Length: 266
Image (cartoon, rainbow, N blue to C red):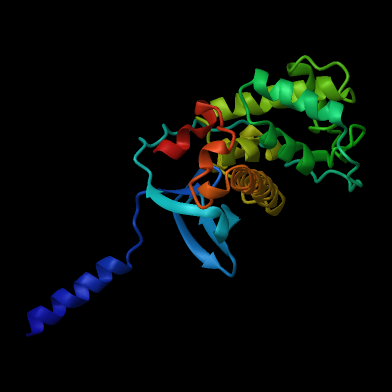
């Protein structure tokens, strides 16, 4: 009897130990967020991206479709980062004007050229400048995608206040970050905000409230766009073909580039 009780106690202890393998949170928009553990906090699910309790993002639980075990091989250790760079300060508060049709065309053309979803680029612009092409941050980041002077120079942008040039440089930089982090959207966005040096120093999202909020805000906004797009497609299909009401219409949602959506296949 004593042995039996010990076995039961051991079983409960094993169940109580968190799984060490990383998981993937698969969002309704197809993106995946790798995390070490998670917990429910009100209406959001808090995804801890590293062992550091400060490295997390909050995602509305309703936007998460399912969880999967991450079967991808672990990333190689990152070499020590050079002297840390101070995280970018929030962009000065601006009033969001209506995005002109021409700017929408520019964003779509440039996004297609770099094989990114234009909704993602729109979400980054929304978070960075509120679509104000003359926005300047306290640190000197400029334009729609808030390019720092050095980044603008590296991307070949001579006039960061020119909307087309700014979106071209910012989108190309975002694409480079996605490739750098194996299309880990969370890491790429964190690097866009705080700098790659910080992401490499902390092996993920740095423990800055501003950066965590920035990443979560863009993920939420982008996911909302895809959910709205899916609902609109279903409504259109139901109106065009009333008899087909209730059929699966997810194929009507614009597919993301294979490179960006690759994480969701793990």
